[in-house]
Image 1 (cartoon, rainbow, N blue to C red):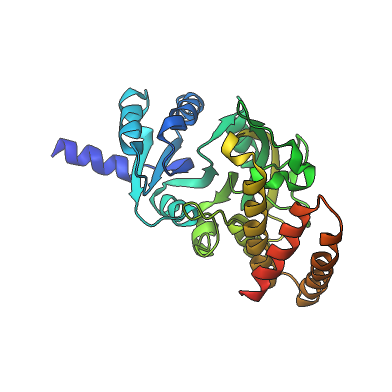
Image 2: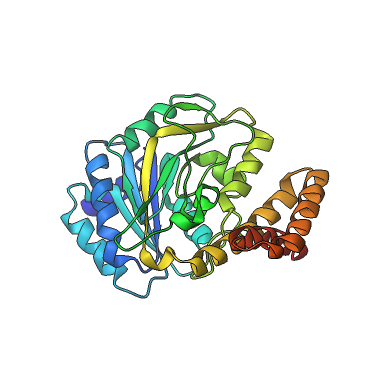
Length: 307
């Protein structure tokens, strides 16, 4: 009975923050981010870590179980296996399980700045906060060189940099789902992430956080923030630092952006943008070295046609 009562109390425990880490077949590198999170959380009794195993086929479960056994705060760590493949589905499952007032979604292949969590705690002092996002800097692993994409397309590696300050998010600025905070009640009330968006296995979609951000702005236009000091470094493996990967990621990501904009931007804006992109697809083939731009324009148009 005593054990059951203790377990019930633990289930009912409330936290200020729930860090949600969705992962799929990344057991080989997962311990890096888990160890870093443990270091930042261990002195914070109001923070929990929720690990969502998104139908992994490697030894992710065993790696997580080993981590929990060795972690000095096992009571602040939860694990859930989600069999529906898809990053949005995994994060929604994590949000439902989480007990925190604020949800912080984090990619499983990042390095954290030392004051990452402290920076999110600072921005949470804003009484009207509904969503906030931190800075993301791509970091090349050995033998990975992605300089060919240029600054315009670093978003395919998650890059987000509006400076190092904490401030309200400007109307034309967006956030990245690899390092983002949501107020939980708002997240759930608006239905969470649209699971038709986002990465699904090897299909690299995206824009799920932008689509939800657009919905939040419709209801709470002055509640969105940028937390520049909540910075992470996103690892870029050699297999992703290729022209083939970049073209596919840009095309699929642009399709998702088009679908989101069709829902949330004025129809006139979308029509004018599609006309501009259409003429780009006609004339860009005349000029060599524009493969990335062509992928963006054609992907955006494909996203509109399929909607």
